Length: 153
Image (tube, helix red, strand yellow):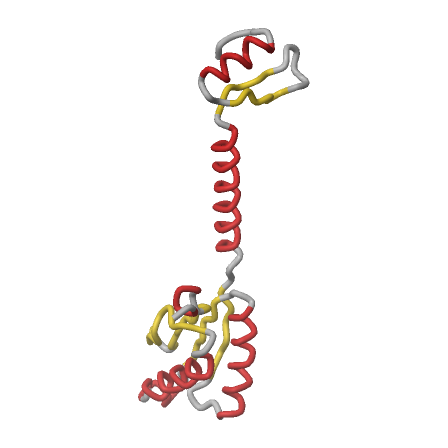
């Protein structure tokens, strides 16, 4: 903060420092101006806006649930995969879940095989974020959209 100066003096001071005189608050009495590098200021502003948009886009990602069965048939699995494809193409993550009941608990590999078949149907648009894991009576797997780095390969 330098104080109150005449316009010509402020412009000369900015010119001597190879900077710009930028009007910050024109409605104030007297008007408020600042000596700064305006191009750098604009660059920083656009960079900050891009970062905010990126964070906002990441915050809007939802995790959608799709429930499968250990004894699901091929047609039903394709129908669930079609819905999962819609979710992934919208940028959301998909959590596929299987609830094991009764004797199915003795053969969790059947549920994991269903999960792998489900992923194979979506492998062109999705990647595995967390592999199929059994937790108690349930088996979970999370699929995410393929990142842009992997799409370019």
